[in-house]
Image 1 (spheres, rainbow, N blue to C red):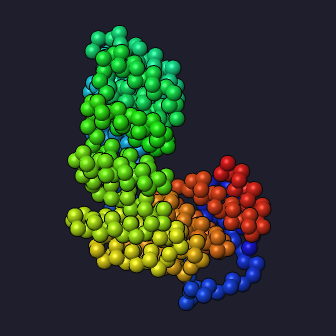
Image 2 (spheres, rainbow, N blue to C red):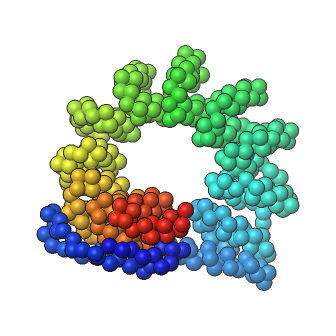
Length: 454
């Protein structure tokens, strides 16, 4: 086969031409030649909602370029702004906000500025956050603790800790704006996320010096962060300290964070010990706890104990959720136990639980690994007959399955189907396609794809 990429900038299906060099060998798992992929597109309701949102944002954004639109319907402008914020489309949000400020009925509100600052933090735009903060001052608003905290978060989430600490120091001298436990929690979260653990001790000392008591949220952020970073010694030290001092009573979040940290690393004995410890102090597991146990035992290959957890759940009237079944399906799928995986999938549907994109992604990955491409086709047919909203991960699994099987034509049909379902290709998509094309000697295609995706 030869794959020619005519327009690498857009990477649409129409840009690809697939020519067969040789006849395909029939798949023993297929009774007939499969039809071209026709994934269900978004439902009219979903599509209508998305189009309304997109249309509203773009329409209001266009009007922001003109000075004559100064008395628009408030609801239209405010809804477009909220939609842009929810979608983290910071450029559109700022343009719409600029239009909002031009309206005759506009009144500056601190809550609006706070939402915008939080969004800019998520989008790692600290400089834009500073400009917005200055704009707020020009609107005559006095900053609040929440506004300052959002600004601190905007800098901290981007790793600009010097600027973040400088803002915290400024807050101390402003009446009614002294940093609180939430402000410092934002800093701690950012330090953990960016693995700047050496700074956490400084933050905790500053909290103590400022007379700010550590809350349950603070302790849980630290315990969860240390656990996920595999800093078990620090996690245990902190947990022991708080238990002995009585300053903090562990809750279900603590419970799940600790056993999840150990279980995720295959440290089953430590997980079981802490499980018993938490039970002794009166904490009762919830469905998330059981899901953690199932996943941990499954990953370690201890299917007997995994089954025991399921039986215990049943006795305690904890019904398995979609998440529970997804975990078990993934475990058996990765272990190559297709028969058991199919059995669990069937049981899931018999119990009236609706499989989601994660369920189908795990099934496709397992069938692909086992070389049962016919069952991948079966999954596609099932998906076609549901109202399931697909995601990029699912399409990546389908693309990988056909790519590994050497079916380049169907791989590209799957790639084409992504756009029709509102899914954007990511780095994994391109890497998978490139790998498949390279394996088939399509080096010109590989070069085009690499220059485009890179």
